[in-house]
Length: 74
Image (cartoon, rainbow, N blue to C red; front, side, top):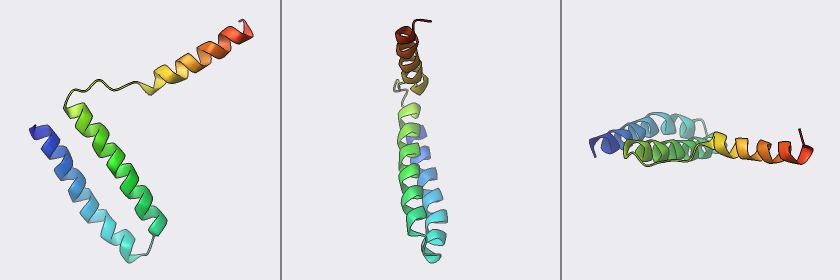
């Protein structure tokens, strides 16, 4: 519970430190990317702090190449 609150608090702090600078410089595209990536990172961090089992992206890559490997017949 406290870890989740800490992650969200740090994310809010980062948002309020960085977003005004981007807005002042009128960097609209960077504001959207920053907000999107911060939201994704916060979500993953909250899930990790709650010990939710997340899929490993390397498993998908391995299954993709294993399938190709079997097609080629090596």
